[in-house]
Length: 334
Image (cartoon, rainbow, N blue to C red):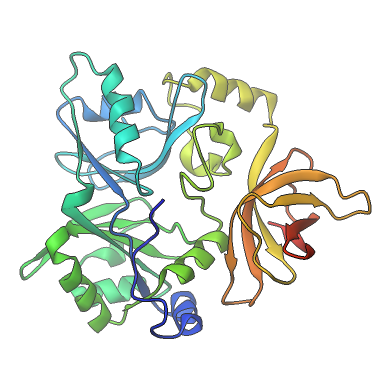
């Protein structure tokens, strides 16, 4: 899967960029992340029938997080949905457009809805940090008033863009979607407003610390929706029927799944590889899960990882160990 675009990794100081994200504002170039539009009078009703959150109730300027699921309740896409005056904008991890469009198109009959891939036409920037709204205010947008999930259309001179509030890194964040050819100018304007560009490795560290999963890396169509650790944000249990609703409701009634995606803070390096075993920290060292992604935290100078842990071993605060080159590294679930 493609990663968020950024300036070359050997330019600048990643620790300074990390600190700026935590205390000020930085810009990550996420151009290449999936952007799909649904238009037509039936767009909200149609999408509502195929995802886990209450899209039909969204009014213009509001949004939600959701999973698009199959009949088994497994995740085909993890999306953010933003309602505009004439469209629903779906933003997701890279390389998801084809699967989303193929799946939705299978079920379209007479509905007034069109589903279009806009990924190649648009740039996407994430402005994140405690001062992110100030950086956008300097740009002339109305972002200061946006709550989580809300969005608005903005313009400044020749620039036109949509701002979507999204705190996916665990602190204030704003996704800016613009015509692809305006991305560089918008990025320069943000830099002048106090939000300098930050690199891919800083984004990775922050999103793992959040923790925030990336579809295709941490989540696949083998995962049940409730295994992903985003149930509170992405699943409505009162919205009514949708494809996959029955198994998701059944799991909710049972009260558990057999594994959950969790974060792990390791006490020391090296950074574990994707697929590395997660084991108990006792002498028996039983396998209890696997790592999906990991990176070095520029805040602690220690690795942080995401991984699936078996039921009873997914409790925050539990001590575990992760297989790394040369042995094991102990860590704590969060």
